[in-house]
Image (cartoon, rainbow, N blue to C red; front, side, top):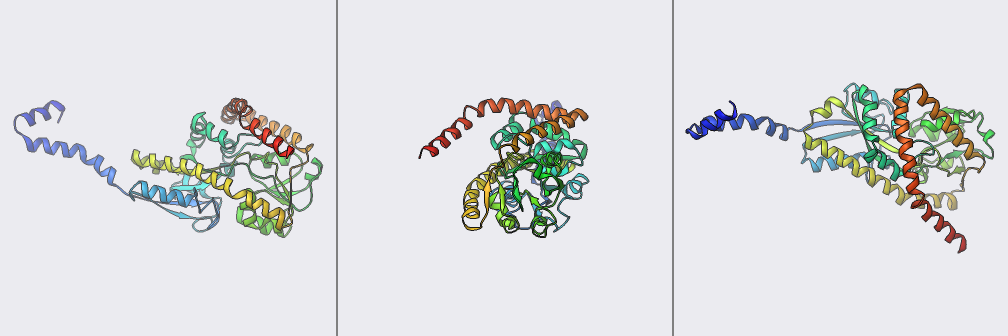
Length: 372
């Protein structure tokens, strides 16, 4: 029945006809609004892992937010690494629709698409504020969606550790040549940079790092920062802790959703997922900021750890190698170049602001500390 027929029926007294028509129009939208969804989420990190699984701003916190905000219409069951699938199989499982969601870091999927790495961390890249600004306001999110579209995935940030530490070494590093022959656990673009200096790069899930370092299967390992690293016991297997966070000036946790499952959600539930993920992005980062200071202090004062920056002569060489690795990759793939150019253009603009805000403040603080 068209609009004129509906109005005529109502005016001429055919109330029953009009009511039936209204019900027919409204029923699908009402049914959609009331439909409930039962989803599964897998995770690249082990059971109980702070930040990555449990705690403020974690994936399980996200799940609880979504449940409450949706009035129970979207309920998600969480599975840590190994509970449903192995740690690094979430990308494929979500892509093929076996599960609806996975949490990990996008640089784990460099073998799928090199461009994915830009959405976790770029060496000498953006800090938490800058990375979030690029994703939310600088076109990064749309590029992420473009990169993942061929895999039937909808990505978004769900956490950020902030700056990470260079890592743990069984022997001290004094010059760039000391990296040659080292077996080191390190993912992402930083691994490709280290490989330029002869490092044998290993990609291990978090739960496998400590035993590998303890047994000497690897000589060095990067994980996150003081709180998370202490929890894994890395200080018990290596005592030299290099703090220069050149490789991951921030580190984004990734939520991916199967595209068909995403499209099945009504708009209000999609918005709830987005808002909950954005909330966790901030809450998780501030949790890291709140816990790392105490942990680093304990490691140095009570656990016999030597924590220090990398020798100054090493860092410029790492920066130079980073530029070459990124340039080579961008030259080979138009999509990588598109993401690279967007990231670097935004970084240049953000750096100009950070140079008169954060950098000046930090320099003044250091100056005051030096005078006290």
